[in-house]
Picture 1 (cartoon, rainbow, N blue to C red):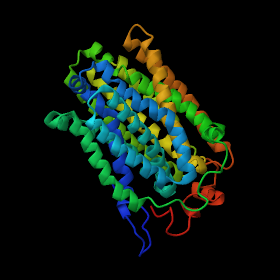
Picture 2 (picture 1 turned 45 degrees about the vertical axis):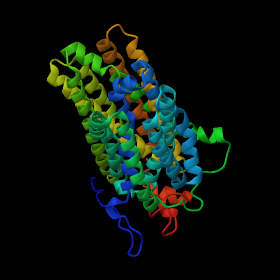
Picture 3 (picture 1 turned 60 degrees about the vertical axis):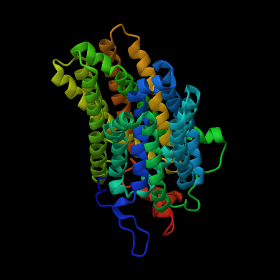
Picture 4 (picture 1 turned 30 degrees about the horizontal axis):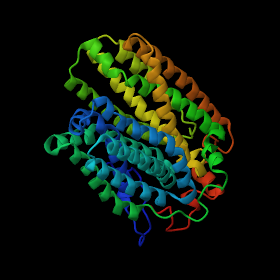
Amino acid sequence: MSRLPDAPQDPPGEDAPGRWRYAGVFLLLFLFGTETFLVSPLLPTIAEDIEVSESAAAHSVTAYVLVYAIAAPFLGLLSDRFGRRRVLLAGTALFLLSNVAAALSTGLAPLIVSRALAGLAAAAAGPAIWAHIAETAPDRVRGRALGLGMALFSSGQVIGVPLGAFLAGLAGWRSAFLALAVGTAAAVPLLLRQVAPAAPGAAAPESGAIGSVLAAWRHPALRRALGVNTAFHAANLGAYTFLGVVLVDRFDLSVSALGLVGVLVGAGSVAGSLLGGRLGDRARAAGRTDLPLLPVWALLLAAGIALSAAGPGIVLALLGVAVWFLASGGFVTDQQTLAGTAAPELRATSSAWLTSTMYAGTGVGAWAVGGFGSAGTGTLVVGVGLALVAALGALAVGLGLRRAPGTPGTPGTTDAAQEAAAGTGPDAAPSGSAARS
């Protein structure tokens, strides 16, 4: 695990995890990333074992994604109101139990239910994790902290999925889910030590549940960012749905070769997450707190999709895949930074909406690409077109942050100062409280 540069040191006598201060939540992010992508390579084996078709077994994937997308904003609100620790620990416990249930499933119905519970668990814990990192990492390394978390999530695809598939080949598909449960259990003592109870007054203001869930959409910067997020992922993950088809049509790749492309996708995401966090921190240190790289990631996405779908030769096509997901990792890290700073009282809710709009955009993009007779043409037209739309929208987000008073883009106003003035964030907490996590 990489060290967070310039990580703050807790005073002598405090229970200081030092460079491992986020070990528990980072381990969970790795497990969530593995869980998200694990079922796909195991589908044939699972379907054969429980005696259903592969398309029927795929409903377990749909259950996970659908429950996460719907539940995340509501569970994010619970985290904002009642603190990260409670919601995070509850989600972790449910994630552990859901993976045990998946391993014990003997039919399609219990498997789908267990996967839906896993989606509910990740919807509770995921936004709480991103909010916890955003409010406890010092501003000078906040981007790198969030980028490292996103890189570890992506590493679940690069490292966790192959390990899970290898384990499934040795001891059956159930063993992969049991391994996820064991890993989750290992994270619990770390979470208990590193995630402190919420400081008094840190919860979001009381209001109606629906109004509170929708509060992020009433915040100008967040509303624009969520719109850009939808367009970006309609291009990004919507087009990615057909990437395998495009590469097979263009270069007649084998299944094993497509597996290696998947590793390239994950590696690009890891690199982009780490690079995005570092570049974002440097930009803020130079006084550019208006997310100047957000439109750059969208333009790189357009270039990567164009090369993958129409670049001459397989080398340029694979280079396009690498650029594509480098841009994806950098963009997501910038967006998480925005969600964690634009409205401190809505950190988890905003992060949850990022995921929900990501899934919504993915569905819209996949539908749009699928409407073309040729997957290559659809990927090129829809992917590049929506990426350029996202780039224009990202410019508007940056301009809005730069002009709006009281936002992270206001010159001379730091996130920490805004949070302290609002009575939220680590600077507002007494010594030994939520700042010590």
